[in-house]
Image (cartoon, rainbow, N blue to C red; front, side):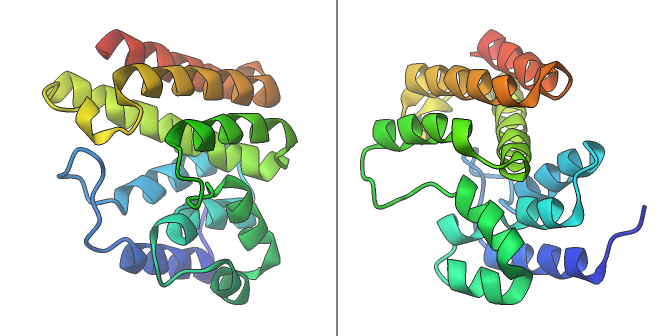
Length: 184
């Protein structure tokens, strides 16, 4: 399966937007995360707008130069709408409240947003489990919820997502959560 010029452009834009950022392990370039999310979505057979949203899912939340308006202008209403559904409101200062709202929001998300959120969570849990296995020291300090809060929210989110996704697409999330809990 070939990808369109829009996918190529989204990859370039995400690479540029996340330049200089790293994952919580401090050594992995952040850009690898949206690439993994896109790979998961492609494996699940997501349509192109969902794939584009997966590539760009963190730009509005994490990159100053990206706004909802810019995303709409450059990639259209559908992509921007999906990204808006998965973007946390960083104006809410409480980490616990942001995460509570994110879990509650799963019940009303569009099917496309559910796929992006699930692919995002799947990669995040797999990455964290690998990091815990390879370099267990000082991992939890990078997480606002610490070990307990991060694991609790992961479990709540996986439960909410699998309720919407069904068994087949939910199974990898349940497996990744189990691996994460085993490593933690």
